[in-house]
Every structure is written in structure tokens, then in C-alpha cells.
Image (cartoon, rainbow, N blue to C red; front, side, top):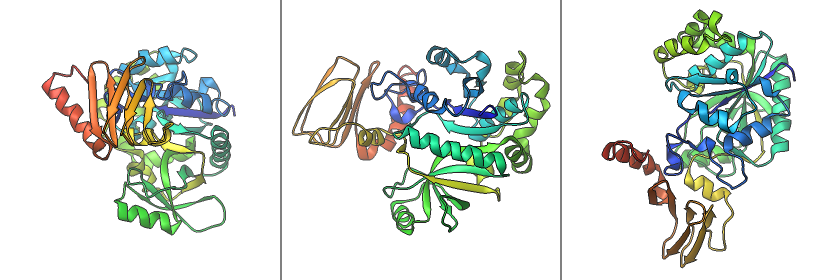
Length: 357
């Protein structure tokens, strides 16, 4: 355990959860289920038995440093890796890996997002523990795949090679498929949902960055003497804007020949949309979900209502809609059209000079 590290990616905007999720306070910092813990805090809670607190790094945008300090007072400033600009997951992970390497060459690294929901925490810990042991002993990149329960078009998929064990070699990665292809994937029994959870040891991931993404890695090599020192942030601020914007999936995982997947089932959900949140929330006999507020429904079915605490919504004759209000913005949108929310955010930013973003 002493050489286990964890990188939690917490720099996203979460615009699909507007108006609850804003630029100033994205979804990873919100308590969606009224548990008293934000998604970020819940991520820390389930990882702690596997990784020492001092080995947990939060990779985020510089504008969220104060939010992280507020929600995670138990971590030090040096554990918050601030990116001056957003450059997707590969530069984020390269920074974290380079930071860890400046401290130790012997590390097993878990990379996870800060905004996923996991229902079976004990099974999660069991699977991650198994994965950490595997990457400690093998030159391999490991990802966690979730057994699909529906032909989901909002997730990426991982095809694995045939075998008896739940840990297998990866054949292909596929980005979000259309409905027809998702149904084929599910029926075949050869595909898993890509949960965006990665495990590897320091040597394995470093070699892959050198081979597949040297233009992302080399700037960090050049500032190695500054990493882990008071000069780190200044050096990172200088090089980070020069890096390409590329995902770890496209940049490395889809190209490397030593990629494995561990099939798991611990109640994972990429809490990416209001529709997904509706499916995970407690619902009444008419499939309506109410978050944080009070709601009375009359001839209304399949809605999700989320207002600020203490408010009442009266919903009549409306089906399958998102009704959400926060900080001066009321959103009423059909669930089937929730992909349009990003356009609503862009339009509001342009029309109202960012007042509601």
C-alpha cells in the first residue's frame, strides 16, 4: 500500500448539469443526493483504504484550488496539481505521473474521475485492490470495464479477448456508438463499458508516454528539477498551454499493445446527465424524482425536479422533463433533448455575458 498512488481528475466543467453545475462550482463539488458529501469527497472516501491520504493527488483547473481546499482540508497544497488551461486527460495524467516520479520511481498508480457514482464500495475496493496487485507485477496498462446492463449510447466500449478470467487482454476501444451498434455490443457478450478508471505502474506508463506521446511528456521532463518544489506551479504554468489537447484513451490506450481490462460490477455510473441522475434517484409511483426540494405532481410522469432547498415545485401535466433551478436560472427541458443543454449554456454565455454560467 505504501507505494500506491491515486490521481483524481477534478477539472471538468460539468456543463450538462447546468444550471446546478456552473463554471464557478462544477458537479464534482456538489452534493447531489443530500448525503452531506460531494462527489469529490465520496471519491476520496472509497479510495482511502487502498491509498494513503498523502499519496492522493487532485488534478484540477487552477480556478478550483480554493474549492478543493475547502472540501478537502486534510490534504496539503502540494497534493493539488493545478492546470492553468484545460488540455484533456493525457496532459493531465502526464503532469501527475511526472510529479510522482519526481518523488519516487516505485509507484502503482490509480487514475479515476471525481464525478462517477459507485454504489457497491466494497466491491469497488476489491476490484481496485486486485488491479493494483496486477500492475505492480506486470508491464501492463489496466482499465476497468463495467458489464453493460443496457445498450447505452453515452458510454465508450471495450472489446476483450476470449478467456475464462475476468481480467483479459483488450482487443479494441470504441467511442460512443449509435443505438443499433450498442445493442450488438451488448448481445455479443464481448464488450464492457469503459469506466475511465486506469491502473499502471510508473515504468509502464512512462514508457508508453515516451513511445506514443513524447510531445506531451518531454516538457515535463525538462522541468523535472522544479517538480515537487515551490517552483513547480510556475514551471507548469509556463509549459502547460503549449501541450496538445488529447485524451489518454486516444493517445495511449488505443495504441499500446499491453492493455488489459478487468471486468467488474460495482454499480458504476458516469453521472454525466440529468437523465442518468433520474435513473439513479429515488422515484415515486409515477417515476418522478425530486432532489433537495419539495414537489407536488398532478398527472405528471417521469420528471426530475431539482430546486434549491426549501422551495416547492407544483408540476401538472408534464412528462419526462428536467425542471431544475439554481442561482437565478430555471431550466425546463425534455429529457430526450438534454444534449441541447450545452447549447443553452453557450447561448446564455453569449447573450448575457457569462452572468449565468
